[in-house]
Image 1 (spheres, rainbow, N blue to C red):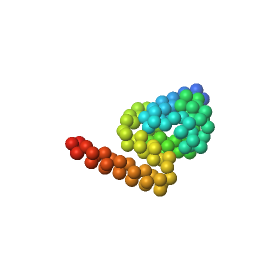
Image 2 (cartoon, one colour):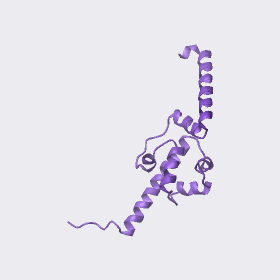
Image 3 (cartoon, rainbow, N blue to C red):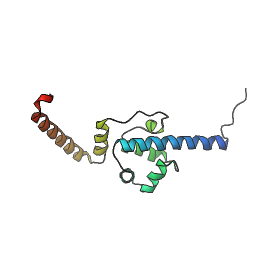
Length: 130
């Protein structure tokens, strides 16, 4: 049995390229699913919009710290961002979670209370839907 040389630069470059492509695809899909622009993601990560664009075009890989922060901004996990077949983000609560993530904790409480009041009001107007 012959051990494979894991430090082969060609293999390493291919792995990085594959990883960058998966991150690019998953990050873009997640951002679209929750309705954020590249500029909004960049602002929440305290990065330039061009940097986020490079991530989404698989031209650059973020640091691990940035990747972890990106996952939080996109309301997902690092594992999902790097997955070969990520879960499909189509839940409305995910969109609202991303909106809430941009708020301070006390503003999040206010926004949830306001949403609850709106839903209660609208439900009372439509008793047939209960």
